[in-house]
Image (tube, rainbow, N blue to C red; front, side, top):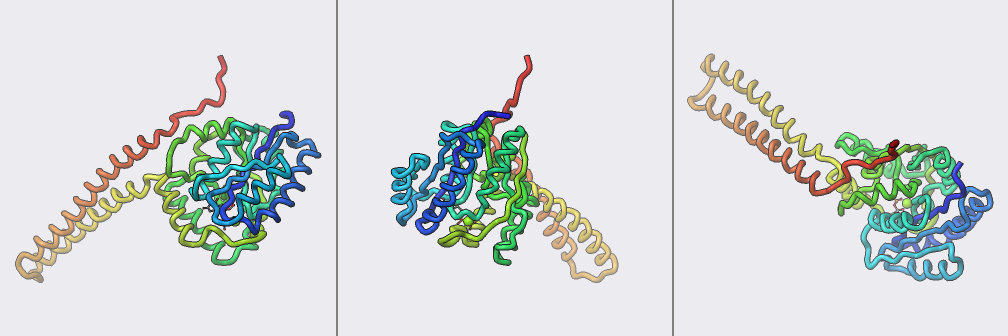
Length: 316
Ligand code: UDP
Ligand code: MG
């Protein structure tokens, strides 16, 4: 068993003035409980990242820090979105802790899952994914769209953990691995599984927001899904080639059909030639687009400059 690790609990906050005071009392209780139970070091911190909020969020964070040095505040210069705010906090945690756990400011993820996560870390996992085991408290619409989101991502070739949002534990070395991914279009759920190492899952119930409103309305969720796919997968480009082959197959069928029609004499003159040309040229064009797509996919993967490997251990 590893000795009491320093934990950094990373929480991105955007316009969370209503939720923070409630979240704060829960965090105080939970952090003290973890320290008293000897699960984490007393030097552990809560890292609150203010993502360019327009309300009093930063003032509240400043006050929290003044009252209790367990609270660390990071103020971003403007709103950069959830993923970037989270990354800013995680990169701070990489330098200042042994393990980081990320959570939302609204405590929809049950903070009591932290015990289980730390237990699994002690058993040897470098990354522990928090997974919602039910969505009883989500509205039907949120449940439907959110679960559809995970399934669609899978179909589009993005490797993600089903029903896992951004609530996860990462060890220092997993964060170091993550920091080698320099891409600007960040989709953490898709990148973290790429880092590797031993992973585990901790299940929890998803609650309602403690206060305030969701910062992820449907419009943002859709653009998040598109971002996720285009940041992590070249499958949409591959699909062009498949479509090209399907059209090619269809044009053979059309070819046979129009030849039969011609033989029967059921056509006006020139019809066979035009119909066959349209289908064949369509197929050739789509296939050519597919070839260009393959190369663009390669260029796209190269520009991301992802690490080609991360070494876990060497015996020599
Ligand atoms: N958030 C952020 N920047 C943004 C939008 C959201 O830092 O531009 C934070 C927000 O404060 C919260 C977390 O991201 O801590 C998740 O947002 P929310 O709970 O509104 O999303 P939902 O749970 O409804 O999907
Ligand atoms: Mg939420």
